[in-house]
Structures are given as C-alpha cells and as structure tokens.
Image (cartoon, rainbow, N blue to C red; front, top):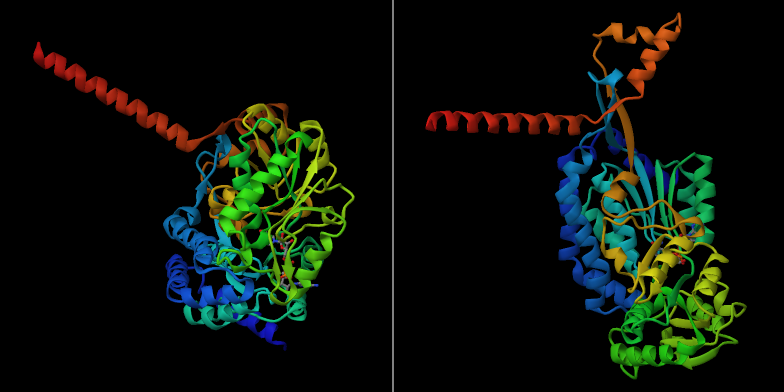
Amino acid sequence: MSRQEQLLQRARSSFQAGKSKAVEHRLQQLHRLMDLLTERRKDICEALRLDLGKSQHGTELFEILVVEGEIQLALEKLSEWACPRPVEKSLLTLSAEAYVQPEPLGVVLIIGAWNYPWAVTLLPLVGAIAAGNAAVIKPSEVSCGSASVMEKFLPQYLDPDLYPVVTGGVSETQELLKLRFDHIFYTGSTAVGRLVMEAAARHLTPVTLELGGKSPCYIDRKCDLSVACRRITWGKFVNCGQTCIAPDYILCEPSIQSQVVDEVIKCIKEFYTDEPRTCEDYGRIVNQQHYRRIMALMEGSAVAYGGDADQSSCYIGPTVLKDVTAESKVMKEEIFGPVLPIITVSGLDQAIQFVNEREKPLVVYVFSNCKKVIRRVQDETSSGALLANDCLVHFTIPALPFGGVGHSGMGCYRGRHTFDCLSHLRSCLIKPLSMEAVNNMRYPPHTANKLSWARFLLLRHINVPKLWRVVQMAAMVGLGAFVVQRFLLHRH
Ligand code: NAD
C-alpha cells in the first residue's frame, strides 16, 4: 500500500469514527490553525521570502491576514452554518419538519498552487474543517519552502490523522488522484485542472476547480486615469504579477494610451522606486522555468517601460508593453508575471467584443466614471467576478463567492460558500405517522376530485417562519390594543 493510500485510509477511519464531526472538535481545530499562524509566523514569512522573495509585511497582508479573517469568520458563524435550515412547506406537509441539514462529505483532497501557497491551501482547509470533513493536504512542490514548513508544522497543530500533509511533485499528486476522495478542491492551471477532473470522474468525485486565465481590464476615456492606474499598477505588480486575479492586460482607446503608460510608470516608481530590484516590496519569479516562460512572452512586443531582467535571481522588472496586438505572443496565454500589455480598441463596443471572443476569465475589470459603461460591461460579458474601479479587492469580502466560470474554473468558495461547497446539503423531511387521511388523495383509485385536492394542497407553499412572524405581530398588536383600552377605561 502506498504512503498516500495509508494516509487516506487513516483519515477515512478517523472520519468514520466521527472525530471530525463534533462541532467542538471543529472549533478546537480552527483555534489550533489560528495558533499555528500566530506562533509560526516567522517560519511562514521566511519560507515565502525564499519561495517568492516576499517581504514580511507583504506576507502578513496577502497570505496570513486573509486566512486569519477566514478562521475568525468560521469560528463566529460555524454554529449558524451547521444548524438545520428550515424550508418552505406545502399545505400537505404542514405538520412535518422540512429542513436542509448540512453534513460533512468525508475526506477532501486539497491541491494547492504556489503563488499564494498559504492562502490557497489553508482557505479551503478552513472550510473543510468547519464543515466537519477530514482532508488530505497537498501543497504545491513549486513553492517548496512553504510546502516543507506546512509538512512540519500542520501535524503539530492539527489532528495528524484527520488532516495529513502529502508533499512531493507531480507523481505524488498523480498517485493521490488515483485514490477515491469525497471531494477534490484544486487550485492551479486550467491544463492540470482538466487532468484533475478526468481523474475525479473515474470515482464520480465532485470537484472544485479554481483555475486561471487572462483577466481583462478596460479603462474608459471618462475616468480619473491617475487613480485608475494607481489601482491597476498595484493589482498587476503585487507578488510580481503572479496573482490569479491580476489584471492580465489593459484595453483602452488609442487617445489615452500614452497617458495610461505615463501614469502606470509614475506608480511603479512610487511603489517600487527607480530600482525595483533592490526594493523590499518587489518579489521574484518563482523559478527559472517560469522566468524563461515570461521572458519569451514579451518577444515581438514594444516595451514602453521596464523589460530589465536577471535570470540568476529570477528577477523581471515591472514591464509595460504598448500597442500590443491580439496576435502577439503575450496574448496567447495567461501572463502570470510582471508584464502589462496595453491593447488599443476603438471604444467600449470593441472592448466587449474582444473579451467575448476569448475564454471566460476569472475577473473582468472596468474603470469608468460612467455607470452606464460599467453596467454594459456587466451585462454584456461573463466572468467569475466583475470588479469596477479597483483591482483584487473583491477577494476581501468572504460573502462574495470566489471562483471562475467556464475555463477559469467551476465551483466557488470563501466563508460560508466553502462550508456549503464541502458539505452535502441533505434534504430532511420528518413526518408524523398521524393524519393519514390527508394522504388519501395520492392512493389509487385516482379520481378528478382527489386530483383537485392535490392541486390545492401541493401548489400552496407556506413560509412557516414568515407565518409565525405574522402571528406574533398580530398577537403583539392585539396585546397593545388591549393594554391601551384598559388604560383608557381606567382613566375614565
Ligand atoms: P502548480 O504547478 O503548483 O500546480 C498545482 C498543483 O497541481 C501542484 O500540487 C502540482 O503537484 C499539481 N500538478 C501539476 N502538474 C500536474 C499533473 N500533470 N498531474 C497532476 N497534478 C499536477 O501550479 P500552477 O498550475 O503553475 O499554478 C498557477 C495557475 O494557478 C495559474 O493559472 C493561476 O491563475 C492559477 N491560480 C488560480 C487561483 C484561483 O483561486 N483561481 C489561485 C492561484 C493560482
């Protein structure tokens, strides 16, 4: 039996023993995960410095804070998320209890990516624990520093039987994918997402695929360009452009292109100085393979700013490309690096057409002072998310489901969405054995009279909580009237 199989079997037996299901256990494990983030912060920051050249404050802001927020939310809301959710009933089932009971799925496989290795691996884990599952955690081998810190510390803080970590490369992931899990939560490229789904199909395992793609960013002429470019520059170059929801390229009219270039350059200098190479807040490309890939993407395009690079340290400076065409290399795949191409279009119509001619992206960005422009982009395109007049920050609202559509992914997560995604929402109807006469209409012989009763009773839905509120309100009004009447009588 392979190591992966052994770990899975142990996780499954612990799950079947009911260890992960008790709400107190879930809360305790979430507290332990929070402890890990607090007590091992230094190790996490050091790992990310080695993996991606991230600064300590950058790591705390983009990786740790978001997971802390997610844990805090789960701790606050878990009992609400986990409790039965009453549903509307028909007249026929009025005396029964009808509700949705979330229940754990079993053992979830979480496969993480390398660009925000802590966030993309631990955020689904928070939901898996909250929903009462066991989970096998496979961090990306590309961010190997973070993977080994996770392998070392997660078992010290969390129940090692329920939440084992498997490290290793592609072959280890492939071994895991041969096994039968109850859900696979994958974050990474669209190409590997396809393989994950193929492997899952063999066991009929449901999947959540958090994939990538080219997220377009349209800048309208009627727009405060300096604010827009400041937000875009931040969204593009944070983590050296290795962010799944980074604006991949800009679409704008030719008349504003040079202004956009100037504003972006101004912001690059403000954020990362004239020498980003020595700036603490400017990271590095994750490895040589990605370095070569990104450098090759720039071939054949006009560099408006940057383009400087150093292979030995995996450094690529913040780069702006202008007058890029749809046929250029940089437009053939997700850039996932610090290169910002600008493509000119004749206006909003052409921008929308450009977006719709391509795969549905994770995000569509639009910058405009005009509500009609924003509305048109919203109505006439499709993407995982739509963000107007800012970049990335929709990720900070856990109430907004995070995920792609089409080639940018399937399923979504964050906060309660992760809880629901990793739960089975079980329909429960608990009927009494009394009131058998009501059922006569369904038993043969079927008659027109029985049918009209069935029509009457089945087609009328009762919202019991709402009905109950109306009854309470009526009782309070009645009581108020009674008190006032007694008071008036007393005075006379
Ligand atoms: P990666 O290379 O780290 O791969 C992710 C995981 O897939 C790893 O654990 C790896 O072992 C496994 N894997 C790789 N090749 C495999 C194969 N042939 N068979 C089975 N398993 C395999 O990450 P990546 O794919 O380079 O990540 C970058 C991509 O992830 C980008 O496209 C980015 O947009 C996307 N991403 C999406 C999100 C999101 O939330 N939607 C977040 C982060 C990254």
